[in-house]
Image (cartoon, rainbow, N blue to C red; front, side, top):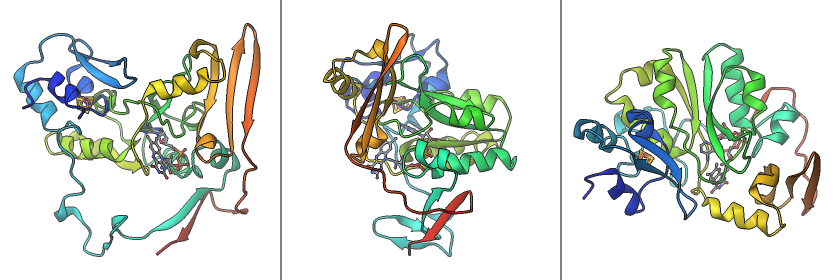
Length: 283
Ligand SMILES: Cc1cc2nc3c(=O)[nH]c(=O)nc-3n(C[C@H](O)[C@H](O)[C@H](O)COP(=O)(O)OP(=O)(O)OC[C@H]3O[C@@H](n4cnc5c(N)ncnc54)[C@H](O)[C@@H]3O)c2cc1C
Ligand code: SF4
């Protein structure tokens, strides 16, 4: 039974996406880090039942659906693992900065940059590191290359609320692209059924392979194993750790920066390419 927000949270259904806060505004809901290290909404004052019903109709903790059958292109093929697709490619950015500073080849940042520079959208709504607390993530509206790339816009494995600014983005009445996890995209599709601005303004939905996010406590345990506290941290680059190559952990020591680089192996360069984004057909 889902009578209030707490029911969704206490049943372990909430993914912390932030869309409910974006619907009600911060007067009603605040997204807070729980003691278990998860981002969860807290009801600050009673949400009117009409608004709560709006939340129930879009919340990815309550409703998760793929692309509606009628929207599947008639030319689409189907794969047991990948689902419906028109074509499948290996892809990576050919801009070395984007490729090696992004997560796994920089395709999402490369495509986001393309959408900005070709003026297909005014801004990108994506997820970046909190500049004051780099272990934490915040959503961001980026209007140019510098804003897009100089903010640790790579895989953020800990808790994040990529949709907490979604209504703020819609209210700007400008075209944009959204980058987020498949469940975030599912919530946007649900919202598009009742808010006509979604399909008109949010022109592109870009997503990543996602096996779920980790609790914040995991990151805390990790840095504490190197005797570093969160308030001493200036950079935590965990993507390389994920592929067991290297992990960069920069620690602020008074005015100096001490860089602890943990090396697991060497990067494998895959080759050189002339296009901004390289595609190699898979199937
Ligand atoms: C929570 C999470 C789980 C993942 N699980 C898997 C997995 O199980 N298997 C696997 O192979 N790969 C996994 N990945 C890696 C992911 O598939 C790669 O990041 C993806 O291939 C994109 O690489 P890229 O270099 O193109 O992205 P980049 O160009 O580095 O861009 C990354 C984009 O993702 C956005 N983003 C980052 N973190 C989040 C977040 N938490 N929520 C919403 N948006 C975010 C950023 O804003 C940025 O726009 C996971 C990533 C995340 C964030
Ligand atoms: S909308 Fe998102 S943050 Fe709000 S309850 Fe549902 S999953 Fe949690």
